[in-house]
Image (cartoon, rainbow over all chains, first blue to last red; front, side):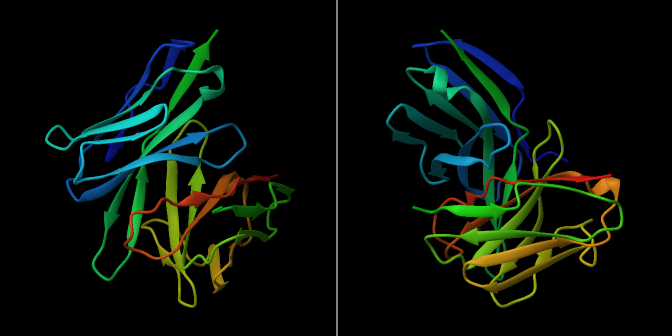
Length: 115
Length: 117
């Protein structure tokens, strides 16, 4: 049961244009959402996050939007740069009784920014 | 800040060997560390959560006797794959956070590519 889904395995965008990466989730207990960027043979690098009480968070060229009613979030990158080419993972956090928490990751979207 | 170092980056060994992977938080104290496994073109799957000084909590389907986790200090957690077999070949990644409830991201190491011949 895939609780976090990234339905687009790949996305190609021209340099300077906007990249929009999408993520859907099914678990209403998720309270915090994150986007990570990953290059081959490296660990994921944190990009931006959003709490479930907000609907938008912006950091430079990166903006994350959250639509709780639709259980959907998206990452906008504008303007896109060739260095943004990587795999982007959406992740969602759930807290558990007793103090633990857990991240569930999507399957990733390979973004390619072309010159 | 928030650098996580994972070692070794790549291991190739014979079937039946036990392999230890280290995960260190270099510039912060990690109360909680996480171990993930990633198969090709798939998502990161959480294997276990490790809190400093206590036993790790394993996800369903992960054999605790196969994947031994030790988190003896606030900056070091180790994952030992015991008697490794070819099906254990995978990309193993650790992450770390400080505290449990604050809205802060997990910071990841660069992973270990384990290949069992």
